[in-house]
Length: 176
Length: 196
Image (tube, rainbow over all chains, first blue to last red; front, side, top):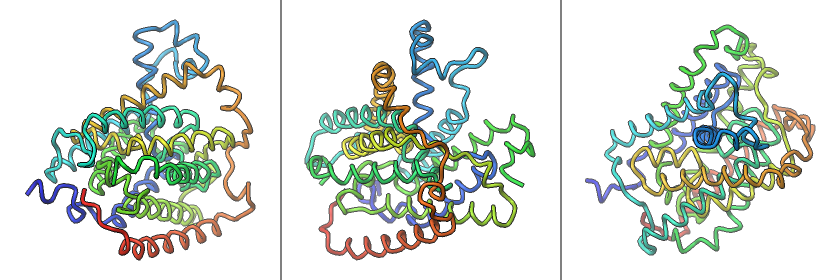
């Protein structure tokens, strides 16, 4: 079962169904909390927390980190951190139930796993930097922004996918 | 009348519990839709898998319509929803950098979490990269601060910037989405299959 059906389309949900459910989830989230979902903010909180443990003075003096440090509560005590913890659990549940949960480095057979990991790291660094600059990522800025017709949401969505398409040619060896 | 927590119809202590529940649902359906696979995600840029486009546009259209309807029916006060501020320069520059990161790494933060959750090591490495990127940004912040704070238009919607009413935006977006779905389905028939 595992090798043949691995990542093969029909073992995943129909994308329109998945999108519909995601849309309902977004409506629910806005109805409950007045805000949308997100992901990159949790990465930032984790970084602030970790650095604060190691170098508190540096964090307090820094122009950027200091915005996220508060007197009485841990930088990890944010809505997004709880949401992200839930997401990890939910994704694991889905993967485990479908037999997709196992350790592996997923890559095109035309490149090595080392190369895949190197690009994953570089991609992560770029995305981490960009998400702080744009104050959000595809989930928080683009998707949740679009739901309330925020101009920033449209700008971010168009630029992310626009620039992705423009540079896709240069990374084609990694994927196809 | 929603949103419930800002209107204090639900105690704020529920906030984190709701976050957890929403997160579980979010992670579950992302993974179930295939977003834990970097090759599936990158497919939208090369034309061998349009799942990202289908899920993303469907979700955006459904939530736009849902929020609009709920507010028109009086169940949700649209003005109390958080609309993120538009900082023109940083939104564009950040978006461009994220686009490159997306194609290079094959993930975005939410999807990398789903991948890492099911054991994908490339997802975990991506998350490590994200944190490094945050550190790099913060250390460079004194030089970036000007661009970061430039041209703040405030919490504007398309209605404010382009004069396009919310109803029209939703309608046009929905039409664009349907055209994109149909177009990519036809396109998919002509693009050679990539086994992944």
